[in-house]
Length: 171
Image (tube, rainbow, N blue to C red):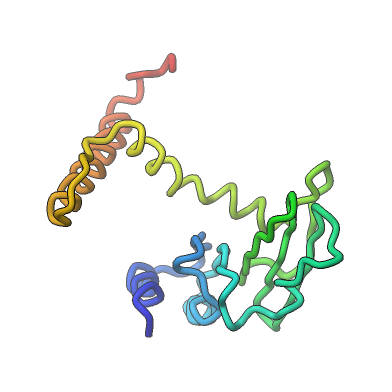
C-alpha cells in the first residue's frame, strides 16, 4: 500500500458518514474504494498520469473551452473539465450524476463542491506563507523546525480566536 493512501486511511480509521476532500497527491481510485467500505465518501483532484483514468478524459483535441466529460463506474464518477485549454481532473465517490452548474463557467458540481471544501487546507497555507518564520537552509532539520513553528503559530491563532471571539471582530 502506498504511503499517501496509508496516511489517509489511518487518519480516518474510526470515522464514518463524512466526505473527505483530497488534493492530487492523495487521490486515487483505490483510496476511494477503500473509503467507501468504511462509509466515507471522497472528492479530489487526480493526476493525469494515473492508470485508472480512461483515455477519453485525457484527450483534449476537438473539445470546446468550458466543456465537461464524465466517466462512471458503479460507485465512482470522474470528470474532465476544460477551462481555458487546461484539463482539470477530479474523481468522486459522492457524486453520481453529471451535474453542471448554470452560468458563464459551466462548472461541474463536483468541482464546485471540491472548491468549497478545499479552503480548509488552502487558508492555512496562505496565512503561513504570508507570516512565516522560515529561512533558507540546506539542512532539513532546520527547515522542519521552522515549518513546525509556523504551524504551531497558526494553531495558536485558531485557538486564541476561538476562545476570544470578540477579538479582531472589525476585520
